[in-house]
Length: 180
Ligand code: FES
Image 1 (cartoon, rainbow, N blue to C red):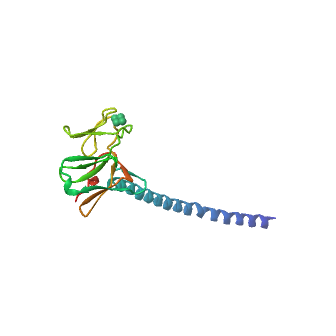
Image 2: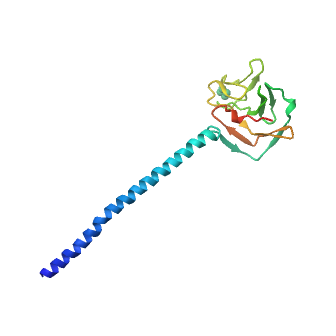
Image 3: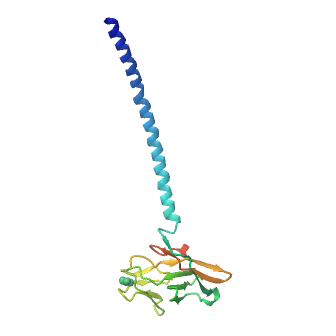
């Protein structure tokens, strides 16, 4: 009887020994897991920050079938001018420094068609008087963000606007301008 008990004790001791080493290895494992997760979170956070800084500041593109419209030769557009392409539903702006941007005609408030005011060098919306600068930035609310724009390519001196790809943006940024 005594012998049996001591045998039982021995077995119990062995089990406790096994259990005793387990929490420590579990702790080590959890520590490693937390460190791994912290590194992963750090990498993701850095990726988000870099994405925000270098991917056009929160721009969003929407696509319909690619539709290139030839706007004309570069030299036919003077610096500091705006030309309307009603069929393509865009304005082609050539800024003072010679750069181009193709702006959507659609107001970013509720979608009315904006008009170009040559004397004031600005776009104005007839619906609720939002105003936009030559590069499409908001000058006067209620429009919540800059005018959408379309990608431009310059092929052998000819300007082509892809009206199948609309780029939404919060505000104007220099990287939205295309130079010859
Ligand atoms: S729709 Fe243009 S300001 Fe309201």
